[in-house]
Image 1 (cartoon, rainbow, N blue to C red):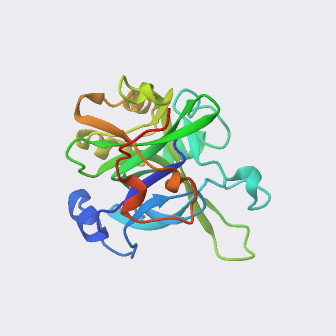
Image 2: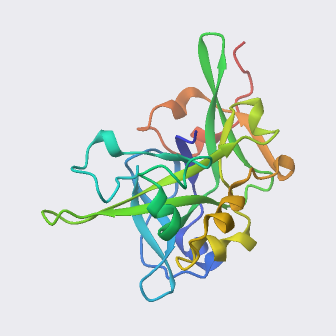
Length: 226
């Protein structure tokens, strides 16, 4: 799964890379946690790319209420086309989730050691996301998203069996295009990203608390407890 990630690249830079309208503000964060509103890139009703602040934890449009039962942070690639909460967003409401790295926890005996996984050059990358809008007419609509996960590549498998789907730039156009609804076209995009250009490092359990943020979360841990 993917339960925490870092986004330290600025919104203007993300907008430049994706060719999207810069219309949101978001301070750099090294510890993005579920329920937080964060920037994602999607195609607007006018057909242009836009950055929007959506809450992490998808609430299906058909849910009776916005509660923990429906706040799904991840969607498995293997079932995303058929699971009721995800099949409509998979066909029509896809987005890119910018990140500079993500965290996974490796079980070592009775404890869990956090690791930070990123590109070797620490450049930003973009995760496959699905979004939905819940609007029952009582309050403002709730727009939320989930991150699609797949089997881990060789690097990530050292820590966890799953990883978020990282989409190469040449796949962005197809993934964002709401006119593309053929699952035979979309599903092959969800394979694991090759681990050759990535790296991982153990980090402090400081990142375990979502209240903690800052560069310390992703700093390499020199002495890893055995």
